[in-house]
Image 1: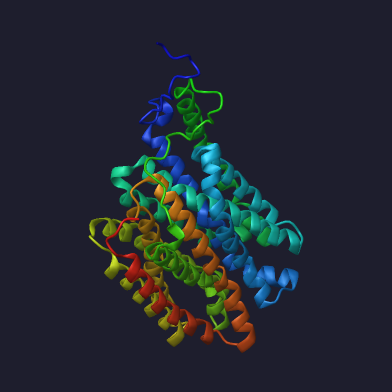
Image 2: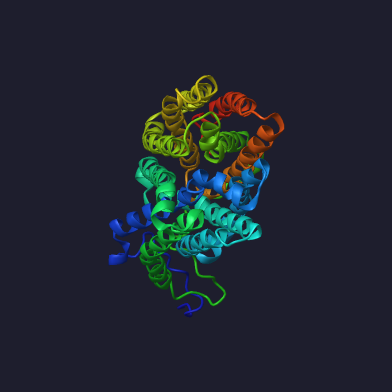
Length: 420
């Protein structure tokens, strides 16, 4: 007895539809351009914090919120992303997030304090969606080279941050419109990334068409249905919490220095231009750690020693800022660059290495980034408040030194050779 058209089972493709839109070069170009945007708009604002503070008459605590708000909403937005990708497909969600990111950059430079913080909220939510979507997409598209591609993806994020940190002040001079003109220019990078990502959205449409015919009640699936089961009891799993805490503490250290490193150096007598260059140099060196550490992690049985090494390097770099904040700034920036880039790459690699499917990576990524960025959000505003209370940057740096030890403990657990 033959089945009717509506009763026939779904014909789900096991691989993406083979068209010119599926060419690896197009996919890789899209991934890299999206990744370039994910840190640029945050790093671009750091050398401008002093000017923004003077423009609106903000306190140090309120100035810290400029960096804290996007990080906070990265944590708030992360749990929503798996639901969005199931409903609309990863490709369309990524495109939407990039466009929203560009819009947030423009809202942030409107002439009011409310718009400044509203733009930060929009940017944070957009980055949250990309933070959760991209590791699962990388694992799905490059299953045999997930660790290596994670390194490339992490490196590209930091390249974007380096370009933004190093060119924000020069852009201000070239464009002649002050900090607003300089910051708004980064919306163009988001537009370029959106155009480059369009082929993947079109490919997703072709793949969804390929699974038809299907029952009328069935919803259209993403490009390739996620293989593998979900992770039951994820929020009760110690390993998931250790990964989340490693990401959170490492990110807190990163975002505290993203917000305040140029100011710390300037307050100790360094010129504003040189402080911006030191900050850009630190971001540049992060590229080395972000590329090499995930590659090393993928070749290791466990990554415990690597996690402890990254925490130790963070401690050494912070100690350099404590002991010689001007004369030792370049050396401290180099050490911190390797440590922070490596910690970022390792945290993302943990998401890939501790799961056995794209669905699992998305779920773990959602949890670890929700917890991680909520922790990280405490750094910039907390650092500003502590400096305002004490009148010194020393307590802030001492606290970061203690947190490096906590990151080592979390990394020791996260680096175990286990799969969720």
